[in-house]
Image 1 (spheres, one colour):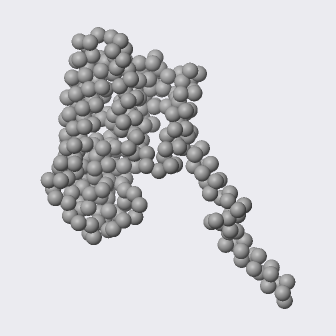
Image 2 (cartoon, helix red, strand yellow; image 1 turned 60 degrees about the vertical axis):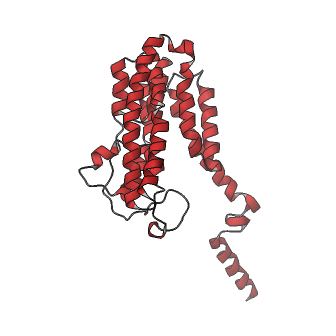
Length: 281
């Protein structure tokens, strides 16, 4: 069930795929000291890696054994998918439905791999191992770097720090859950959604993203009492096409025109001008 994302062969140059709005080319941006890249990468790796403790507690509380919990962190290594899996199992969901929901959340890593492959341009022998570290945090640290060297340092330090710390804290959380006994009595079942929201919130930068996330939450909560556990997270994905469709209609509606700012499309303008010339002649 490992959600490793293969890094395709690089065919471009550093910075060929940008992380956001168009900006200066990589060669035009000032170099960033290696120490600053390492500092930023360590900050992200340590901050997020500590949340592995919450996963270990939640996983043990959902009925998974210590070995199963640790193997999930070692082989899957994508926090949102892991929390989705154990959360669905804890709610009594079907294991196949829970696995489908976890896989669905992990698909985003494939798109990260497409973007990072050109930026990192790693040797072939390294790519299968690096693919295991293609996750939200490594992508967030790698993409803004001004040079390929800085991108590789950021990716490596973030991935290594997070992988080691996440697995250590997963083990500690699972062992601690056994010592605590009933995890639900401590309210630790709220740890998984809290950690997931903490990771997700900083990524919602545009209005479209915020509206999509809000609608997905509404759909999941509305469907929770009426469908089996694990299914709401799958159906909440319908929020994305719905929001895109509605926003597309809103952009075309002003002025009842098909073009920007309510003006007719270029084809219709040409037809109207042709008819006007015929009437004048």
